[in-house]
Image (cartoon, rainbow over all chains, first blue to last red; front, side, top):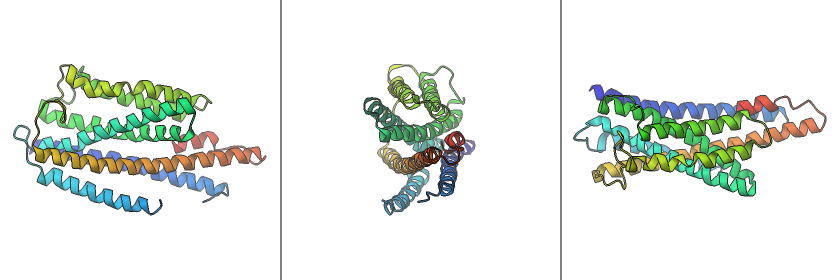
Amino acid sequence: MNALKFLFAAYIATWAIHAFYLGTLVRRFSRLRRELKELGKDK
Amino acid sequence: MKRLFPILSIITAILLAYALYQALVVAPTDALQGDVYRIIYYHVPSAWTAFLLFLINFIASVVYLIRRNQKADMIALVSAEVGVVFCTVVLVTGPLWARPVWGIWWAPGDIRLTSTLVLWLIYVSYLVLRRFSSGSQTQMLAAALAVFGALDVPLVYFSIWFFRTQHPQPVIGGGGSMDPRMLHVLLLSWLAWLCFGFLVCWSRYRLEVLHREVEEAHAMQSLAGGAPAKASLPLDRGSR
């Protein structure tokens, strides 16, 4: 049972790392789109 | 192309869910390690995906050094960044697997573990160089660093063949035997994470294209005598 904690920790950590990275991508996308809009070049 | 992305996303989500089900429910329990061995279905595919992305980074960097091709430069940047994410997963899940099996989180001096950490540090420094250096030579310096950094990939992979190490022998081609059902789940997991990695790279590539468009727009604006390129440096930092 104790070892299972490590299994679930590893799976959760994997998803957390990917979710964090995807979150930064979304944040950067929205910042750039806003920037482009301000420059009057929104696509 | 715009329709392809959501379709691929749905396929990838199904694949990841199916691979997770296979890894946790269908794959047989290991006789020695018990259920904790199932970390292999995230640890190993992440390592293979990271190696593949670093290989792509190496090829794109060589192409950039030869032809000064901007697309190759963008592919190099994208593959390095996503590769670092997968390598981070490897470095986090590895100790979580080692602790219950070896009794230690990390084996200091172990060549496989150390060379993987060095590989991660090399590509992190590559990304730091790309983010904080704004000189005209940045792309070329980064490409050169990537070429030397890629030399560590075969060292990481083959270290367990040529050196005594705490790390187990390779799953494929290392002379070890693996239950075919486990191998099937492992390859399925790799396929799922490869699809996921491809989609993330695609998104990051689109982000990079957008970033360069914004940079260009700022440059045009400042050339046209408008407001100075106010966001040139902060934008650089914020978007990468």
